[in-house]
Image (cartoon, rainbow, N blue to C red; front, side, top):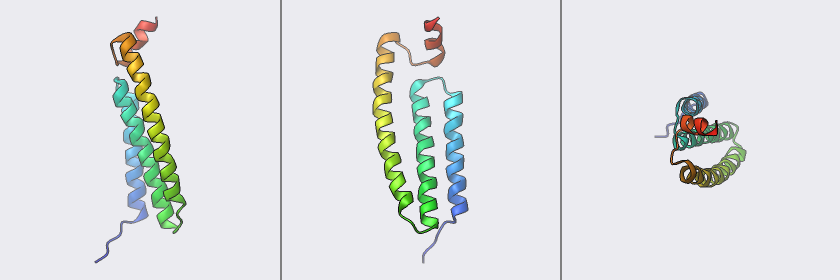
Length: 103
């Protein structure tokens, strides 16, 4: 028995995940949680691409998802390196503390 999920449900899920990522970036004060929220947003956009590609029977959505995964991996590696440097210099990952240190 084959069950399928409609594209509307998948796009709604992608939209909810993207909104969750935006809320996480806006509300969270820790840089690591903000980075995770950006990752959630990237995965939500990848899900939307895969759903659109599946809807029209084209492999373009899956190709875009591979590009998004590669971009997310690069973003995480660079982001974590920057976060590590920030932590070594300021001994804090809180955005508000970093803003106060700049003056």
